[in-house]
Image (cartoon, rainbow, N blue to C red; front, side, top):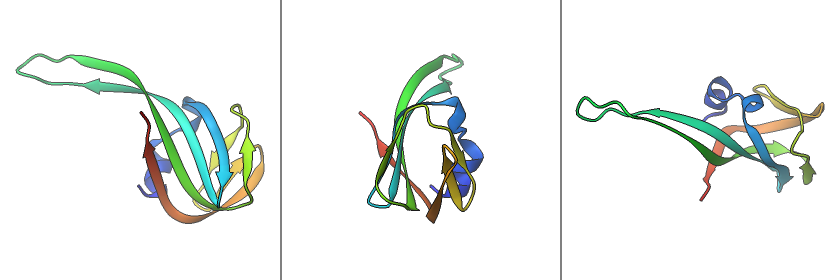
Length: 100
């Protein structure tokens, strides 16, 4: 997905951070997020609420580092700030790893 799409549709403050670290110039943001699905089937409208784990990968310019789960994260189109530490985003693409 694009970084613009991530910034517009995901609010990191609303999710539970499981892990947050930088390795090989990639920022790994492992989060647990609530999901609500409205389903439609032959006039019956069931709903499904569940939790999902996703790892978002951002391309950054920074040394390898681990952050705490309660870190404060803020994004803009050029930088991510983790506990007020400025980290440059080098690619406007965000990869997603599927969690099992």
